[in-house]
Amino acid sequence: MSTDTFKALVVNQVEGQNKVSIEKWTDANLSEGDVLVDVEYSSFNYKDGLALAGLNSILRKFPIVPGIDYAGTVRSSENSKFKAGDKVILTGWGVGERWSGGFAQRARAKSEWLIKLPEGMTTKQAMAIGTAGLTAMLSVMALERYGITPNSDILVSGAAGGVGSVAVRLLSRKGYRVHALTGRPEQADFLKSLGATALVDRATMSAKGRPLQAEQWDGAIDVAGGEMLVNILASLRYGGAVAACGLAASLDLPATMFPFILRNIALLGVDSVMCPLEQRHEAWTRLNAELTEQDFAALTTEVELEAVPALAKDILAGQVRGRTVVKL
Ligand code: NDP
Image (cartoon, rainbow, N blue to C red; front, side, top):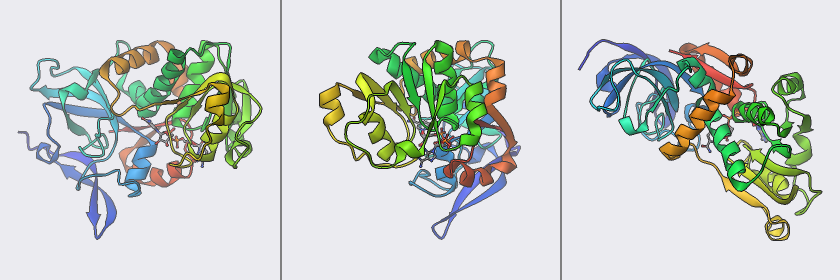
């Protein structure tokens, strides 16, 4: 095993508090696995914010390198599916939670977790998409599977955030009319540039509302949960569906049965962490085909590893726009 060192952002727990520092690690510090990867880019996701802030028990062992996704080049592999030089992507599977993750220049993974980088995509573009972008595509696919077709009205909550901004871009390009729900009116130009047809003020959907409201949307992608998701359920058109993937507002779902049994609507759960490989392959193939270099430029901010700790507060406060890639 190589003893050369590489840079790693490490969380230790000291007297019940998370302590974050940049350390020099060797391969011996990494989690178990059969593929060693030189990480080129990771990305900063909402779950990384929770992890660094010590919330929701995201981190399950210490010391650990957080970072729930990464893309890079295989350095060595004990599995015949991968060889040195292959470009790979990893998202989910508990990496950056139970196993050391993407905020380090090197990572060790189980081969069954890795996806080969789609032809023509760079590792930076892969992380401009990252877990949030993959989740946006999985949410779009969930609505499509349910039978929601373009030329219909789709509400996207948290529209200026990671999942939301990618979802707005994907849906508008497919010909859906996208209603971008945001708490940041100052991001109106950004959202319109991604193809949003109309903006919806977050405040109009955040408070407790009536169990059945005016029918406004054929479908929705919700990153918020809580009263927001309840209000979305209550304002879907007959036969509509919401793909629910997040809890940026709340873990709770204080809903009534009315929209389900009177309007025949559906609540579709979306998970990117344990999502089966076939669905991941389909999602990455589509992301590669449907997003352009201009999209990546519009959606992405790049930071160095040293900037990561400060991002936690920003993302939990809903202040991060689009996607943030971390260069290793
Ligand atoms: P971001 O922080 O980038 O985006 C979240 C956005 O939600 C914010 O930018 C803000 O957008 C909006 N928001 C913030 N607070 C509230 C609130 N109290 N009520 C309503 N909206 C709010 O995070 P991501 O896009 O990366 O993740 C969004 C959610 O999706 C998180 O809960 C995350 O855990 C979840 N997620 C789930 C995955 C899965 O596999 N199911 C995978 C990836 C993410 P604006 O200012 O435009 O209103």
